[in-house]
Image 1 (cartoon, helix red, strand yellow):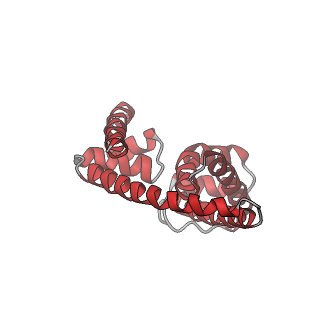
Image 2 (tube, helix red, strand yellow):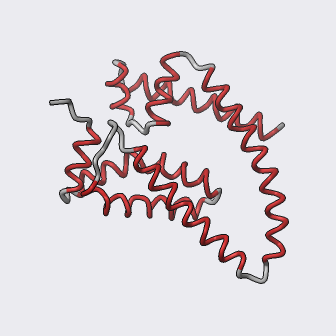
Image 3 (tube, helix red, strand yellow):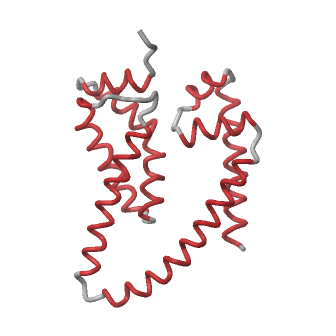
Length: 185
């Protein structure tokens, strides 16, 4: 019988009503889900709402979940993207139905500039991540991209919790510097 991941075990427990298992899933994935929502919506308030909606939907859908990989993040990210798309439709519909619709044309012009800045920022971050050493890149991938907790990443990499925490802190500082460079340019 194949070995089961922590996420698979937690998902099964949560699906059977174990609220503590679901709280652990929430704590492990709330940040990456929030950043996905924020990236799509660009609004802190909307991203917070969509994050909460994502976990409400996840709680309802857990009983029918057949987890394909070891991580719940791809499944949660898919729910988040659908929730964010729904929120965008509502926002656009509400804007179209207001007397301020003419002002939206100016906002669309600004959003093109924002998209160019976002593309430059994404390129700079990708370049920075691509230049990381092997261990730093793996720490970044596991903790930031896949949503691993520090201890889980440490166990997977065969290093201590402190090594993961310290390396991720340095990577984040480096990425913040790269973000400042793009924004100040």
